[in-house]
Amino acid sequence: MQTRKLKAPLPEGRTLASVTRHFEIESALATRLTAATRDERKQLYRTMYAELFAAVPDHPRLTRRASESDTARDNCTKHALVERFVGPSTRLAEIGAGDGRFAVELARRVAHVTALDICDQLGSAARPANFELVIYDGFEVPLAPASLDVAFSDQLLEHLHPDDVALHFASVRRALRPGGTYVLRTPHRHGGPHDVSRYFQDEPAGFHLKEWTFAELACQAASADFARIETFLLRDDHLRPIERAEIELIERCAAVLPRGLRRKVARRWYRHIVLACRVA
Image (cartoon, rainbow, N blue to C red):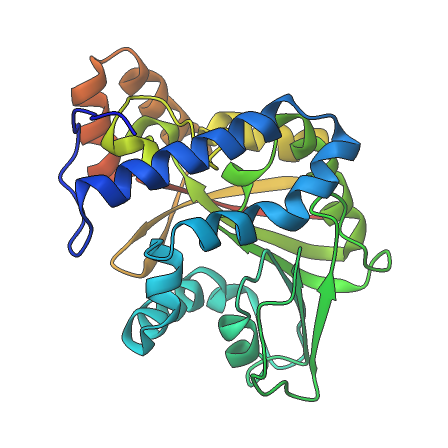
């Protein structure tokens, strides 16, 4: 394991050795994933997180999962993202639901929740009667056409191979009813990298296979036949609408700034992309 120069302060509770090991293991797995065919990626998706977590026991996702306060904070943010789009009659799917804690919590507020992920991370957690776990291949959403009112993903799209994003949007669009909405959040490229790469370099090399801009993802959604794409800023768990033309102008202007200044602007104003993609 080589000694690396840090580009960002280490997180509390982690050493340089542990973060370096995390980076080297994750970037090696990401390299395999990037070079794989779609069929090969299906196999890798099933095993890559288990392989990573086994080798990196202090991975932040594991430590947050073990913390009730961190889980409550994460769920509060997710509620801020979806609350304006759901009601008692809503049928919702969370794509990339992870340990499912938010999906289980949300089941108390909607008619039905489907949690989709590439493996079962719920363990022995209680599953409400209006909750369903669906294991899928990480590509196409395997739900009946026009069966959902809302689809939701948080910190998912950056983990998809760029070649698979169009398929993802198309399959979500197919599962939504007329008038349905796909709500998503993903880190903005200008503030990145947001994966473990940030400690050592300026471009993502870990499981964030691509970090996006508002304009790029809005184009992907439009190509999948979403009729209207609404843009939002998320600050302090408050979702604020912003005109798509306005945020795309801001990011075009920021794109010409030096990297350090661009990153500061993005982290202050639009650290994440939040879109609500509407079906006609």
